[in-house]
Length: 437
Image 1 (cartoon, rainbow, N blue to C red):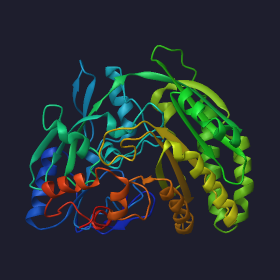
Image 2 (cartoon, rainbow, N blue to C red):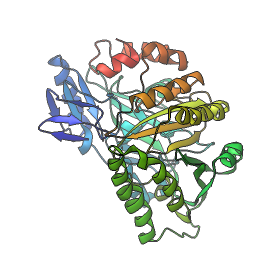
Image 3 (cartoon, rainbow, N blue to C red):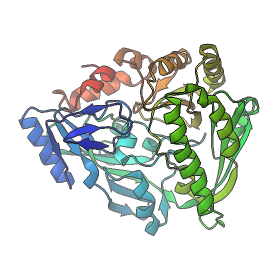
Image 4 (cartoon, rainbow, N blue to C red):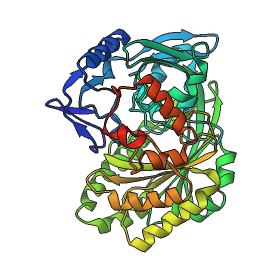
């Protein structure tokens, strides 16, 4: 999230706004006062975390609540392994906060710059056929309602509402505390290696089910996939982390430094994209190591991009992916970013992209200075033809009626929204599009 002269811009430079007022509350009580004041002044109010959503979901034309100072642990239940955090806590800070208690989050996405509340509110996920998204780890939330009141929802306070409110899109209230069901700290053995793309596609179920966590990247214009296979081990397992120099070469020099130059150059000379993709497959992704879970799950990404991601029924994956391959060839496009494929277990969160079905995610990206409209639009049509649901924090073109068709609990969520925020104090233009007025 960036502010220039009071103007807010998200990380992907795909959404911006000049708020009427910016507030930076340092406590849940300060959030409560801010919401109450905004309501009194008839101003809409939106909470903003790290600004890592690519959509306009956090755009706040009225009162922007910057939760950057709302970070840290509130309480720890040692017996149950549950930890309550302030909602603005950044994901990358959580491992150090949990370390003294011997705990970890069960799973993480591959980027950890987001705020906790922002990540769960938009359905952020990692990978693993037996593991659901971050929202499934939430066992309690406290939010400030449209009336400016505290509302606690957990297994003893309105438990039936928990699956409804966790992925709330910021439409039901402002989260101020989040309770996570943690697990004992663990390490992960990782094998990153290239493989023939056709072999990966032909053995996809074996890869997905035979590893605790599995994903792969396909660089268009190549016939190779970069696979990432991971096995969970006890915290006492011997660690063999990547050497500092090797990690720097892979992640800082090649994946970010050189890649930034290539992306920038490709805006003027698109023909460099294919050769670089083929070179990238040869230079990266061939390593084996064992390290703390968060150091394996996440990676540094400093090259700015824009992203669209769709969640498909697992049985639709191969057909959809093959259609994407054919599309890129038929259109003669030169695509500079790899396509990412991950898996997730079904869950019960109402607006989860994995609600009620085992899921495969296909994510496409473009460098932020390149217009993604044509590419993303064509890919989106393929995803929709295969029963896809768009990630709430990433670019898509769907409106409320189309989303109703792919989310079984959509109308139930709208009924709850009507109860929680009938005056739409938490609404903005993006929410009007995806949820209706």
